[in-house]
Image (tube, rainbow, N blue to C red; front, side, top):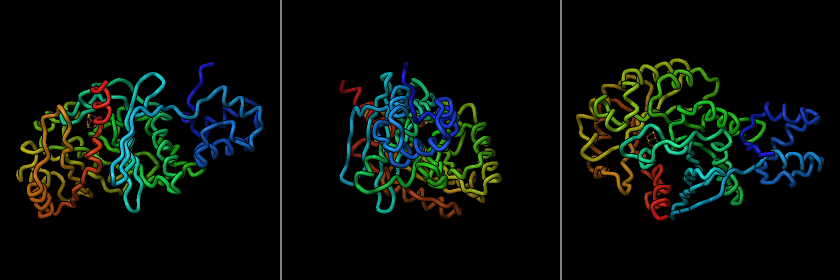
Length: 347
Ligand code: SF4
């Protein structure tokens, strides 16, 4: 029997599986806790389960989908791994350690169909969607790393390889499992999903009962430039993306973060800042400016510090709430898709 990935199950699906095996209802909580709270790596170590059940679970399920292909750390504690899956696909995940938080950035697809011109992943093309277990498993990987140091994952950002809203079901299932109070119990407000603006999915996300945060990667204040940077954006013009963001704000009362990668000489002029401010003024939004993280083979560079500051001030002057997000781990190529590109270039 081919083993299934245990992490692909929701709590309710696990309950069905155990019921079919003739187990009493309370076993569901026991098994769920071993996996999602105690981070147990092996069914045989689940000592309050009967031996026969431990053996049956081992026959049916695998607990860890990954083999670590490459790992890089920097002196600030940012840690990036390239994780290989049984079918040979590989994805990146990053742990960013800060004083009061440990954030894990996870991938939702192998490659990405969006094809952003400034992104290493975008240049690889699309291979396949990850399953819910392969998505949540990246968080559990780092949760185990942190547990050994007496720490916990405090935040998750879905900003790695892939467009999460083009793999909506699996992404939401993974997040719901991480959020489930009976196990991993990571608060919904500590989880952020970042999209390039898949309008139908934003509208659907607005109706979810969870309080997950939404970030939208805009990267340009006008459609023509945006289509050059984010080819898939052709399907959803900026006006539609903004309307969907408004619908999300209206439905949830929550602020939307707009992400804007700053590319020297491309989208970093003051006229771009003014156009961006005109789009967002008066809305419950925040802008995250992300100076481009240089990558081999990509013809872009970050603006200098002076230009970044001018851009930030221009937004502020127009009443836009703005921060500059410094790219942690530049030395370890923590930009999305960069470690994978390098590993496969070297092979
Ligand atoms: S930036 Fe995000 S959406 Fe764009 S190609 Fe890269 S992974 Fe895909």
